[in-house]
Length: 249
Ligand code: FER
Image (cartoon, rainbow, N blue to C red; front, side, top):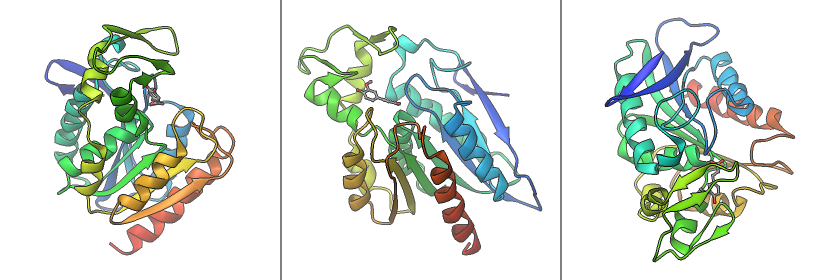
């Protein structure tokens, strides 16, 4: 299925709970930088959610997966716009009792930015290994392992997969205020991060967890950015949290 953000067509997949009686929650799941909605860690997370009675909506964001837009020209502003369009769609679904938001890495950062924008409808926020380092690196002049002058943003950066990335990515990322986003979301947060993440600092999540008003922090010990070692611990944490959370609704 597709969700339109203006004239940009986004490729999406809706998965319903294994057992469904009446209405159910829906969790929007967003992939990371260079990611896509069928990545193994996202499949595992959505399967767990479907098993405990939560529908999931995974979407390929601008310039990623099977969606329109060019990778080179994607920015966090375009992804924010995509996310708001996804919310507009999700709000029209009659079977949905309430909406949760989950994202991995750049999608995790995005989920943290969008949660306060949609604070009336986001009843639970699940950032996974959020890339809080992106706005920090954009301002300090280091992204993708490459230093640059943050006061004179280069026209092109090079992604780790060899593709070009427009300097506008940096210009936009420099404006993102993660602390304000954290302060403006008062709902429950389940923050998950592996403490052997070589791509995105685990310590940023430790700090963020302390700043959120209502956060449960789960460390995946010895694990990397995409939970290559202990994906079962990630799904176990999500399962345990959701079962208790939904019992109390
Ligand atoms: C960076 C570090 C991490 C960066 C992007 C990421 C664009 C995002 C990682 C992900 O979403 O998996 O320096 O620069």
